[in-house]
Length: 122
Image 1 (cartoon, helix red, strand yellow):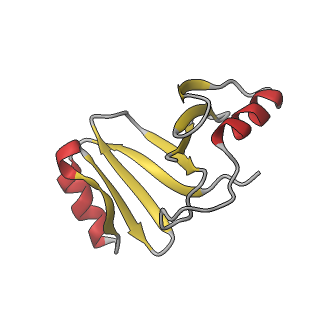
Image 2 (cartoon, helix red, strand yellow):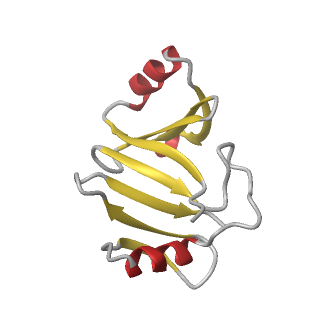
């Protein structure tokens, strides 16, 4: 199963302060919009998403159809195929969004309570 790009998504209290911290660690803004309360920071292949007032805590994010530079990968395994496999394996699927094709997402929770977001943008 190919899961696409991987990042850690952090629910932050102060986006500007978090941005400065991660820039000190060598990360640079890769994507996002401060006006919409989120930034995607990158250092090599390491990606950290900073999200203010969107969720609390930490979430792992997988983006089927993208590589670590958010470039389209083709072919790729559609998020709905991944979801069907995980359901078949007995995992509980939550927060499902999207239709029969195109962008869609869902969440599974790992045994320690960490959300894993599968978020397909195409």
